[in-house]
Length: 213
Ligand code: DX5
Ligand code: ZN
Image (cartoon, rainbow, N blue to C red):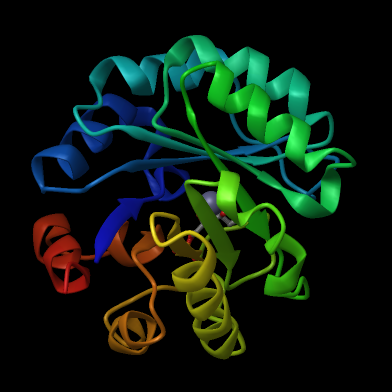
């Protein structure tokens, strides 16, 4: 299991220290939550701060867009050369076109599904995707509780990707901890995002290791 700690739970007064700490603690990706105050009722960071994160991160960036106007934000963040950019299917009229655009910029495209969105919504896009991110909380805030229905959903998606594109990873975001990591693994999940669990733990290294099962 790969682990992407969410910078949303970092201390923004000590952002460089915290980003370096999760990288030194062995994280696989640095998860960056971009919220615009429209798609979700919260507002986070833009390219100035994300570029500061990119400068001190030694693990690749996984940018999670929770915004309206996905194409505008893809163009804004592409110069920072993240490993992944993911966008919500609920907010995109032309997901196939945007996947192609992200790939043409040299970035791995990923799609995010809110808790109510069925895995079948990405069936005809799977062949072109590098990752599907399943939300296990409603997007907008860290520290919420894990929505259990993501487990059967991940299982269904995992069967679908084994059939259609075995290289496509499945990521889960929200309420992830040592309490549900085994079930997530059994459901076929490859990457977990963890914000409050990693940043509230006495040892970031121990927290990350406990999820890398
Ligand atoms: C929620 C964000 C998550 C969040 C996860 O909208 O996408 O990445 O920071 O935080 P925890 O792990 O605390 O649920
Ligand atoms: Zn996220």
